[in-house]
Image (cartoon, rainbow, N blue to C red; front, side):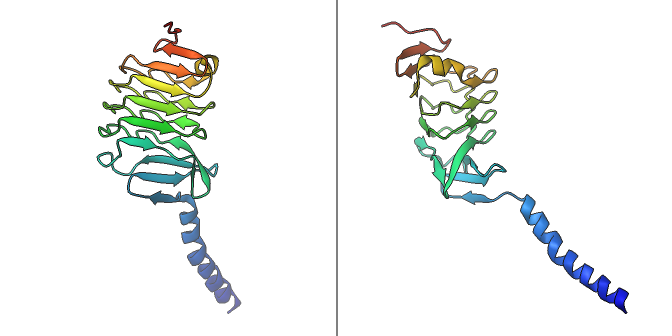
Length: 176
């Protein structure tokens, strides 16, 4: 009899414990009209387009969502978005994922205030109309940003406009 009671208690524990363990491994995801946010293991959020055909002309990614930092644009998060013309990244953004904005062929202007950011491979590849990146740091800080290979493959001939001057696509100083 005692063995049956122990077995029953163990079965009840397993019945209630297993589903909660499964749910713990599934990340929290919150969607709104334009963006989908996923809670990461480090307690920050990643962001991607909910529907790349329904993205505003000016995309301003927030620094904070639900009281937590938005640190990452997901891999291919906005890839192929044709409606976006301008992108504003918060100072809290740390990583632009692989091909995050690839083939955003109408993206012309990027404003960023994130000194510790890194760009994944092909992050802005084939953004053929890109003409301006406004960076809130110095030229020396821009040159130190971690950029994976081909992060800007087949982009427009953009300039990077920093606090102390401007650089061309090849990180050469633009002289006026």
